[in-house]
Image (cartoon, rainbow, N blue to C red):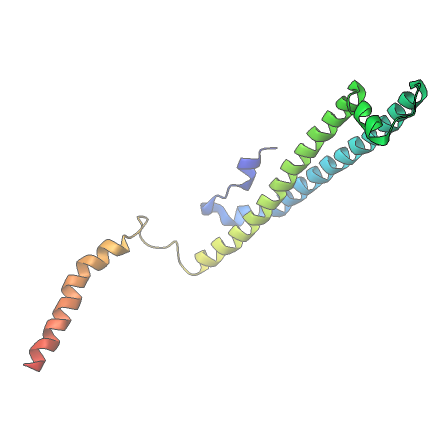
Length: 156
């Protein structure tokens, strides 16, 4: 999946972008659901590993352990650490996929607004944006000063 390419917008092909959008949402939604399922499977695997380790440690211990001691012992076991790493990696992939879905939702809003701007002829005309501050400064001297001067002359 190419996240950056899929969330970018080609302003010159808004119609194609709109046609492509539902397919992207479906593709990324399914990918996100798959990552969530994978994460849930690894979470259940952690519970199973914990249960097996719990049983093994309790059976091999000569004394009764507190729950916090037992939890620390479980956390130190390589099987538990491997299962936890798989879960953390899966959770990371799910979070990235979720962010991609949110970015595509944002893209939808951006497309809606770009279409509105296009309909209002926003993109028509010069390609170089105007520097309104500079234009106003140059016009202000001509326009404002001459109007004030006319009003002052009428008073005399």
